[in-house]
Amino acid sequence: PAPGTATDTTPRVPAQSPRRPIPQPLLPTDLFADLLLAVLSGRRPVHSMLRHTRGRAYDELAWLAERGPLRTRGARPVVRDIGWFEPRAGAIEAFARIGAGDRLRAMAFRLELGQDLRWRCTAVELGGPRPPHAEAD
Image 1 (tube, rainbow, N blue to C red):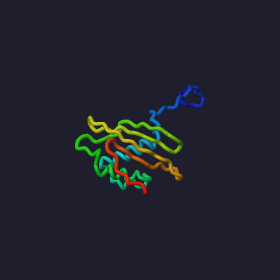
Image 2 (image 1 turned 30 degrees about the horizontal axis):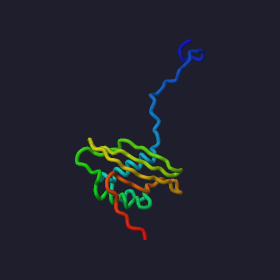
Image 3 (image 1 turned 30 degrees about the vertical axis):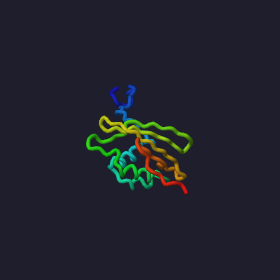
Image 4 (image 1 turned 90 degrees about the vertical axis):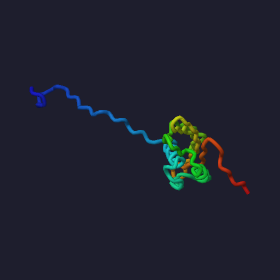
């Protein structure tokens, strides 16, 4: 019988298309590390983080960004590595190694899941001096 005719019993294997990697959803740690780096390197304004922060985190971020700790004239800073710990459900304490050329900095941040199921940054620190805090009344 001719190929493709009703009496053709040759098994057919469907043509396989090249496999594409399944895109993995971004973890909140990855997303926030990139957002914080963009602000601290001067690529995004601090106010772009208003809806992504809660508590003193926005003030800490503004204090850090004002000093431009990750602004460089040479290599653009990038997130090289991220680690995290979940101290309780709905809270993540993370660190990121930020590289720019041969320089390496550390950034730590805390994320908390709100009742609206959105993650928000509640603390941010960068290696070096911490912002001054007002005394509690």
